[in-house]
Image (cartoon, rainbow, N blue to C red):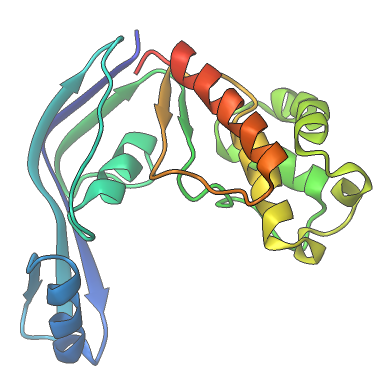
Length: 204
């Protein structure tokens, strides 16, 4: 069963920098003062503090807050990218994250190779990731560009590839951060329909 359980979960991110004191001032402005220094030029960003949360199938969670409030950090905990510094995070079920959609991709690899690499990064088996190539090729409409290194792509082409790869399977838990902009109206409409279908089928 799909579920998310956080118990007293805190995330603290240390920043080791000889300019820690000036960095502290900048970070305080950006993250609402949730910053501490230990006197050794080590600044710690307290991104989440003792959060308790339980989600079950049928639940929908929306996060609202100012920049630096910890929204993206919490989503990364759900995705498994971050582990709590203290407390626990128990995530059950398949997770698809539309946060940092190019994470796991290599600009030196071809589009097709990046589909496999990103797919495995998202938890697909190698066989599943290879099967996803046809689906991504059809949806992204990148055609022969899939055989070229991703560094030759425009930003829009990279977004198409990343989105199409990240949405090839319907997960138990779907995570996304803010609305996704694609520029091209035709592709944006198809992307919205694909995302709506994922939202409808996701358990959380």
